[in-house]
Image (cartoon, rainbow, N blue to C red; front, top):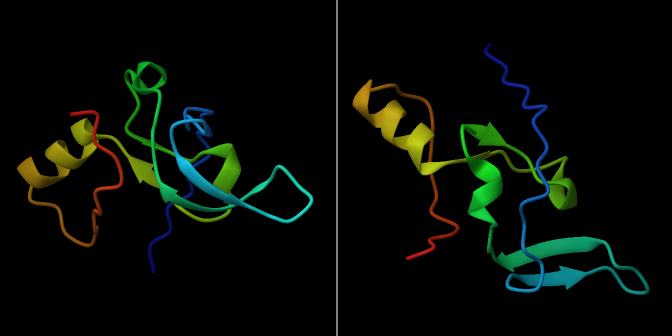
Length: 85
């Protein structure tokens, strides 16, 4: 068994540009339907979590994904959630 614990939590989600669902009577994010990130906060970052979903998803930058593909590593699944293009 292999375990990966990401403790790098970065507040890079742009909630105003993202499509977020919130819990009733709260400003806490329940679900994110469309992501928008402030990529300026992700310089020199490979893997990270966001405070809104700290207990769920692990996010990876394009640079990390490209390195994984170059090295032909297996066991990781990438899903495109955001593109600034």
